[in-house]
Length: 204
Image (cartoon, rainbow, N blue to C red; front, side, top):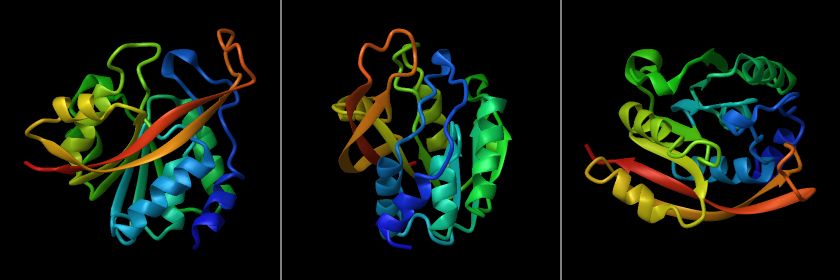
């Protein structure tokens, strides 16, 4: 599957019917998701790999990984409503993905989720709750050798400091995350946020 074909397929997926502000529920844009996944594919981190999507929401990254030939894909999220949409989306594209509930804030990630080869994720940026992304980073590094994650642009110094002696940032890909007017505090129809996709390689 070509990059453009993947992007077009992912654009068919449904978003959150009633997004929750506390969980920062914004559907990952199809172009950004496709770019992350296709880059991971070219690095040998998707095809025939065990892939986990942490905070999968409506399944954008998980379903894309399945379409690109992952051996197994499992998506985890705290919100049952998002998981229900994710399951519908997987059926829509005939993707083989297992979606399960999990609360990463409680710890015990290895017991809840188990080991995998690659984590893909779009964690909360911490706009509603400071450091909301940290449990996702911790979980990813505890279960996978390689992680692809979306962060706010300029996050590398924080990520490098937070993951010191556990992982290294091996690649950065710039991108944009257009956020449509969703919640009452949004003042624009579309706000474009600069982001970066980081590839983290576990070192311990």
